[in-house]
Image 1 (cartoon, rainbow, N blue to C red):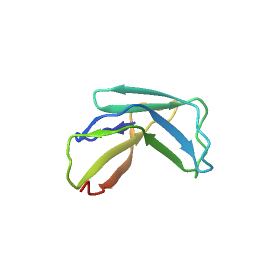
Image 2: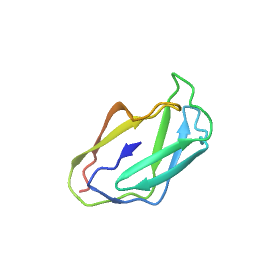
Image 3: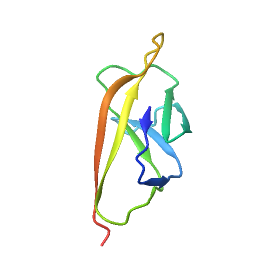
Image 4: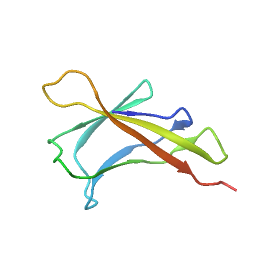
Length: 94
């Protein structure tokens, strides 16, 4: 689960890729500024995944910082497990 920052007005798609650049089969669902990713197969421990937001439109035109809260959930367990916060520094648009 990824919490979408308030500065992100909209985007036109999401894809998940692994460390080799291969797309990871998953189902994406957006509701109330939270993006849920359900993987078709279990994710191997120790691997890296990248979530790409495509054609993002932002509310701010200045430099800024985006914070994405990231949580996970294990099959068979109830509730979300906090993973951390991704911090993205936006480049200047001048």
